[in-house]
Image (cartoon, rainbow, N blue to C red):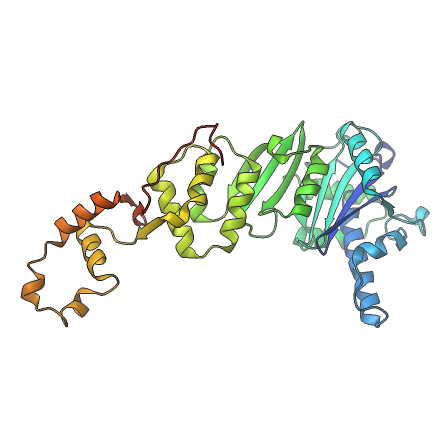
Length: 358
């Protein structure tokens, strides 16, 4: 199952994300597929050592990458050769374009120090292996075990890597959603919401100028947003906007959103976005019968027991709360949902036509 080193193009392109800043490098020492994790860990360790020595207050791991040499532990014959060479943005873009064409580089690797993940994309034209593109936490127990192996060369390590990660894992963080983007046979998986640096990294890795041009699959990790996974046509920008909103929303807002979706049954991501844009117009009354609706309309959060302190039981029994509630629900245009009754103060109507201006 191992792959001979002579059959692998060990040149790699590296995208390094740290402190919300993206920089680019290339390396002639990509080697076995676990080597990126070793680079990640070693650079972070050196940066922490320098910082703790007191010479500098802040040291970024990306600053020490060009100063690192290959580790004798991995490549005895290449000790003291530098690992990383910085790239200007324009040159990096040119290299990434060649990578998409199956030229020059065997791997595109993303070291994300902000999210503590390593992403690996393989040039299928140069590397004959069944390992999928992946995005893995550096704290994954399988990675920790892999890096602690006593391997004489990278072939053994690569064989172990292939057997360990035969299926691509999901992003380690419990994101609002996990998204899988595909463009021209290239894949990129990440959590949502994704920031600007993450979007730029995805564009470079996929070789696309707009992520809305990609095919999109999504796993939803928030029960109030489960409806999104059922939509057939997904749009990256809309998904990212929804995830960004949901990450900061409280449970009452999420519940109102879920009720609005259930009440208006949008069929497209445009419809979901339209409901979110108009969410402030909606009122959710968390009751489940017409009688409770009428009672809530008259007295708000006060309970029947509290009301009896103000009204005699006989007088209150003259009020037909059920009829009053039904009349109010019809007047409000209230719709029944699993979360209660929801209505729009401005009598909102859903319009999912493609030409609608968002």
